[in-house]
Image (cartoon, rainbow, N blue to C red; front, side, top):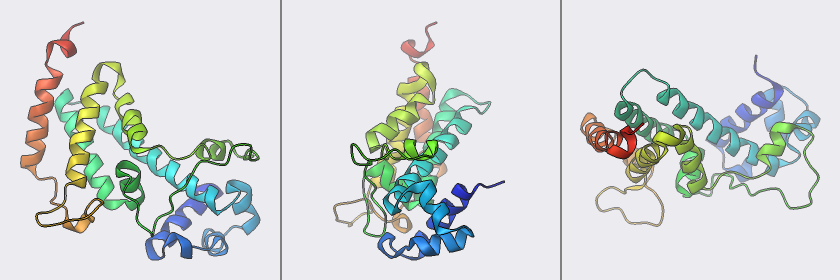
Length: 212
């Protein structure tokens, strides 16, 4: 059963789909989640704390999906290609995750910073973790690679970086300082997946990855 915290995060994410973060009001988030404003502030402390919690949950949900791909009964190269596919698909669907992975933030999104040094610790353990601040792109890639364990971490990082190169590659003729919008991305076609699998097959069968 969803907790009040989950309901509030869901409500905030729904609001963010319709309004820029600057237009999302705490009172409306609490109302949509059917809890009191006091409960909202008890959980997150402030709107900035809510933003940090949204970012941390987005990163954690992505990592959970990565672990699910890696736990599949399949050859290593296929599992790592699935991680690449998951990264592209999830980033296309989730603007906040896309920003976390690429550091390409739009004005519509919150860009949370860690809680100020010396600020009062949140009473909720999950919020204390969120208040440490969202992972930088390199940190999130490292967390993702660690999901594969020491033996396959380098290959997992390669799979994610291949996926992110697909995410940030602009369409022909596009010019700008941040990644293209999802509707302009080319989808992960079977041909692209086969290329990734081929690259990863070489990596996962190299001597350094097959020695006991």
